[in-house]
Image (cartoon, rainbow, N blue to C red; front, side, top):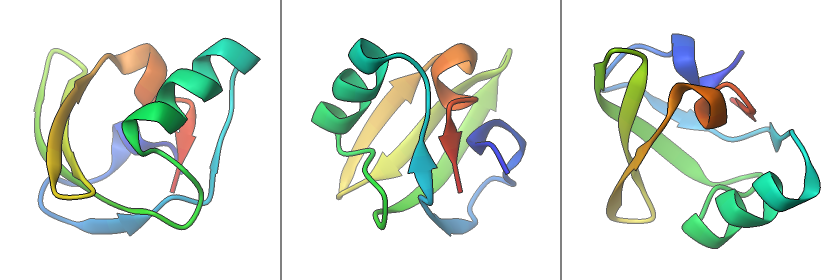
Length: 69
């Protein structure tokens, strides 16, 4: 399921990252790679604040929908 529909506070493992090549590379540079653990901290207007690799990252709804957990 896409990261956009995950409940807050729930630990998830990334299965794959979709989208165009430049989007995948950008997300990978932030730590969104298959096998990584990700937790949604909060959601506001579809945008997410997530905890990945001991860092908090804000991502938009469009990018979050390309991250499959």
